[in-house]
Image (cartoon, rainbow, N blue to C red; front, side, top):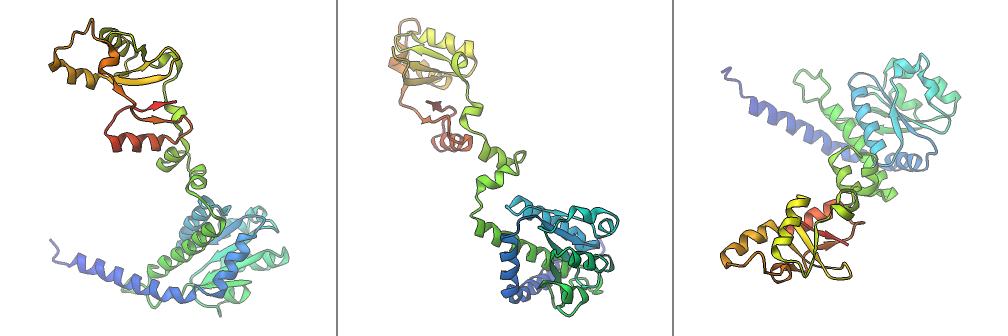
Length: 302
């Protein structure tokens, strides 16, 4: 053991960064509103740029924009000077990030951006920085101090930058009326996408795969159907193929103590009537929630 108080050191970082974010609130101002308005009405994409740690944060901001209804991607300023600037069109908006506002790789691009009349939003700690003065809109991310005791490692400043990006993205999300379903469309491989895109019809058994017997069937005949279809249940239908009830292997265990004759008992006498029903067009997660709420393992789609 080193004897060093790591917990206290960690808490000190949280305290400093919380204080920095509290200061950041004053910069959610008219410039912030103007930036949101311009991005909201943008006919192109938001091109995010940044070097070093600002670049890492920029990647995250671009990804958040893209997944919340604002088309966006990251372009490395160094690569932009060697051809990638061709990705940026006159309909786009550039969001350039630099805490100092003096990143030479970004400064080298500004004359070209101005010549192409591309709107430039700069996120720096000072409106008097070179980038701040060149910006069409400046977003201030000034914080009192870094959490690093040496004042060198970007910590509070990168947190503030990320939060300012989140503030932009989520303000725009709300303005667009962006929904969870919209979010899922850009996340089809994630858990949320599966929840919001999968419907009952995508998962349910259909036609001949559905265990079913007539309401006149015996309990034994129902058990044969359950065994054959291997779903642990069968639905019971009337002459018009309308579902009258359901019988599961759990029901079978419960009636063993009743001394019922498997060969002669009618399934309609021991089935569960009604049951849970859900439309094939319903979301699969709705069926799951319904089954969990009722502690059932099956739902009937109709």
